[in-house]
Image (cartoon, rainbow, N blue to C red):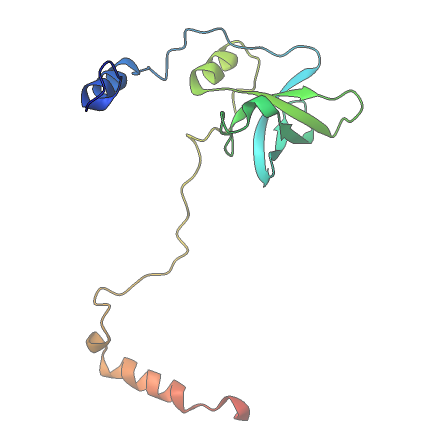
Length: 162
């Protein structure tokens, strides 16, 4: 027997998709700004075990730890802008307490809270070409006689005699 008054199914999923449309470039919530014991930073290296290396905008590079309430809920990637809570007893270590999204980063740039020349993940360069080209044919049958002779000559060389 089919249960009644249970949410789910095809129609429910369609409504869910339509209602969750959010414009990424318009933010209606307030942006968290830093206080005395906090600093803005950019993630430079992912170390694993909820640890990151963050280059703070005060000029220091700190080993940061993601706080427990952010684990498995907020995913931090390379070049993300984060808010770091500084420790009183260790200047080289800190805790990540907030991750900024693109509209919030743009707002902080307008307010001159963070530098204008930071490199975001939108500006990341694509992988560079290493200069290795494949031939058009790709088949062994398309080799010329000169290339086959060169391969035969290389096979005649004995490694022990070199």
